[in-house]
Amino acid sequence: MIVTEGLTRKFKDLVAVDHLDLEVGEGEVFGFLGPNGAGKTTTVRMLAALIAPSSGRAVVAGYRLGEENHKIRQVVGVLTESPGLYGRLSAYQNLDFFAKLYGVRERAKQVEKYLKMLDLWDRRDEPVGRFSKGLQQKVALARALIHEPRVLFLDEPTAGLDPEAAKLVRDFIEELAEEERRTIFLCTHNLSEAERLCDRIGLIKQRLIKVGTPEELKGQLYGRRTVVQLKRLPSDLLGGLRELPFLEGLEADGNKLIVSLKDPEEENPILIKRIVELGGEVQWVREMEHTLEEVYLDLVREDA
Amino acid sequence: MMNYRLRALMKKEWQEAFKNKMVLFGITLLPLIFLGFAVFMLLQAKGLPPEAPPETKFILINQTMFYFILLPLIIPLSIAVYAVTGEKEQKSLEPLLATPLTDLELFAGKVLAAAIPGVVISWLFFGLFLGIASLLVTLDLVLTVLAPPWLVAIFLLSPLVAIFTVTVSMLISSRMSDTRAAYQLSSFAVLPVVIPIFIFGLREALLSLGLIALEAGIVAIVDVGTVLLAAKLFQREQILVRWK
Image (cartoon, chains in turn orange, purple):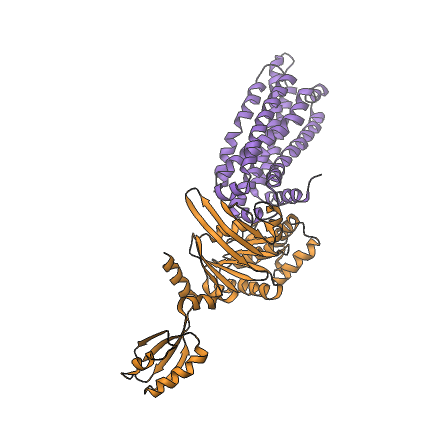
């Protein structure tokens, strides 16, 4: 649904996005993560045909960027960080205006559908300037969807919202992804949000650092590790364990062993048996979990 | 025929503008005040003693016309300024630019939405002025304001002046983030059009068709320049990257 090749954008001497090569499939929720100024918004602006790339190519929903910009704008929806609504107009008028711009047929039905879906129908005639930021963001989300876009760009959709409002918006995005099978390109700082919503994640800092599912990213960086808590650490245990051929790494932290393995499902029983044979008293065993936050911070630091 | 996106944009501009107090003041109260001044001038002309020099009467009638040239200058000002700064303040430009609306439609929609009320309201108040004048003053005075110079001024110079105001206000507003500052600066920027009319109005003869046509011609040329300049500004990338 989205393919980019060497997509680059410069602002005078500043390289905002550097040779971005990316593929996002139909129905995929793709998370785009990066620190401030990493080029997330510039990428969205390029892919939504709002600004031109300095070099490189992209195809969005089958249309070539630069040559078929008008068609791209017809089939994508964009939610910007701030709702950007017309505060003096009602929720209904805001949505109706955008439905007209997109040439939506059966406009009234479509506006009603989204206002009802987002629980805004009863407040449809109120000026949106009176709404809370969370409600405004819901109207903005409805606006981005009013023409049933094939690709939805969400730029920090929950930034600046209180936890309750953020949850409302997040739940709605999750619903969209699960039920409507739209391609969603989600820029966010919120790592737990990305982990919860996204099929794959791309880390960007001007150039693309890594792409993969959250699990793949964790695996690529840390491998899979098993934590074994012992009652005490026998003196010859470490030496004995190092003889195991499949062991990729072993470290002790107090009475805790952290063991890196390639295939824990197959290798864990052998490992535990060997620990017991060497006199270790196992209290518990678990797989070491890494949060996406750790992955993100390590990758960004590594890149710096 | 006007396309649906252009119509939608113009309707939205009006829905927004007419809920704005500053705009409402500009399109209702000011024309009423100017109408009052215009009627007052005409009544002064009517009340002149027979021995008064004819130049006094001419100056009064010329000044009456001045108010009707001023209206299409002032009415669109607030709408045009708000059409740009309002979008900036509300951060609504990016979602708008993400739609299939073309750059030309965006520019034309904003210009027309600001200029049309200015011209229509001016014409409406000119009609009202004629009605009041026919009740209060003599027929020859009414016929003076229905002469070709007046008609050219109202029906040709007014729209040209309105376009000038709108494009200049948009050029200024695109560079400013504060509505009031943009409004004040735009008000000064339209002075070059007002001052010649004001000076002509002080002549001791009725404004001639030639003079009005000359002014209209000059404003038309200036309009072409400002429209071309403003159209260059209304390009997606420019708006997103340069407008602050």
